[in-house]
Picture (cartoon, rainbow, N blue to C red):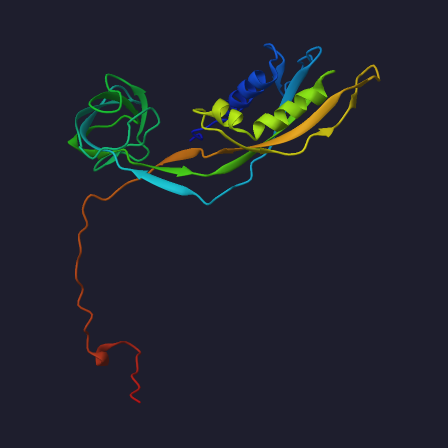
Length: 254
């Protein structure tokens, strides 16, 4: 179970914004915490993930996936699931990692590979190996989304670091940034005030460095398997039993 928006996705979106805003060449935008990677020369930028404070409570979205199918063994470990019909209300998409439920289906049955199917009618490889007659199966899910503030520290190096950090501070809180991040699943929120943080090299020489923290909003979802009930059966139980037959009970009349 992995979030729908990864850290790599955030890094790519921020890196593309910085490259466009500062006009730096390839190799001048570096993700921090990379071991044994030499720093570029001249003007360059290194950014680091700092923290991920929650912005709101979770939002759960259910997707029931019902279909008609059967399962037949391939070998001792895997089986073929053949889907012959899909429920019109099937809103989920069967894929690798989907959990399959149904009468007679083994616990933790999981789609491990696609055959001829691509989310609907067709064949799929599942594990564990088993035999299930044709009937109603399902692969429902619940997508649990958390709105999150991703805070990144940007270290701006080089002789033009003061001008470059001012450019980041200005453009990040503007429609320019909104347009640059469009379609990535990442939305710019705001940038904190830049601060100068010079550092000393191994040769004990001071170099220019400015730092600025930027805030971005993402709403990644984690998809978890979920069973759904198609029908509900109610049984009525008569509770009008005489009080005298109640065990160890007394009734006080005011």
